[in-house]
Image (cartoon, rainbow, N blue to C red; front, side):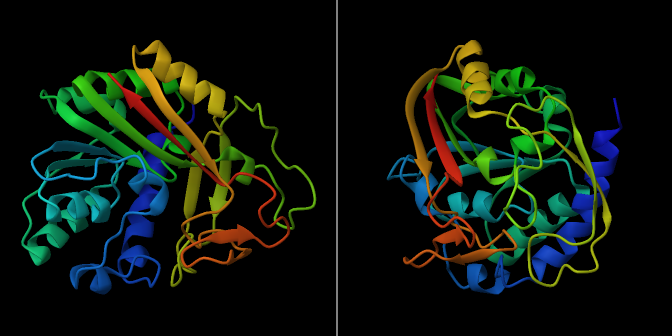
Length: 264
């Protein structure tokens, strides 16, 4: 197998620097009190976070992790990128928030962390970097307390199948092979100089659900959304409500995001 860990770590290290100064993430606004969580995940998260223990898998530089901490949760964030974890710790210090951040490959997390949590959380552009969903689901189940909740928000892979013009299918929906591409920018403003090779996988929704069920979790809720809460696609256009974005060529015609709510 291609060394996806080294390649993806390198390009996420490159992305992190650009992301920290982008309008997309608006770190200064977040430090001033803006919330980073979006409507799809808020719909399934508990209304009261204070006092809960939350594990955030693939946390990037920890903005959502620290949003939970700001609400009174005890938080742990995990990410492959050492640059992102360094930035997360620096952001926690700037915000005067307590948080623990672990830099490791997700599959090796049991080598670094023993305890269990009330909530395991992961969102937007996470599983595409993982080749084995059964191992991923096992990690999720391993870290949930009995009765704990897994909150999952992700871009629907229907959004990833198209060519740049959205006029034809470029990748099959059922595609078990890794997609290896040269990156010439990231998905945020100010990232035109970001370079690297990325390796990812398109996972069907059914394969995600099946893996989590196979890990012994119980499905509580499944929702699909015809909008993205992020302006992260090159052809994004406003979808009517603030913070809702459609694809220009097919506004509202396909699902762009889905959420899963599982219990242990």
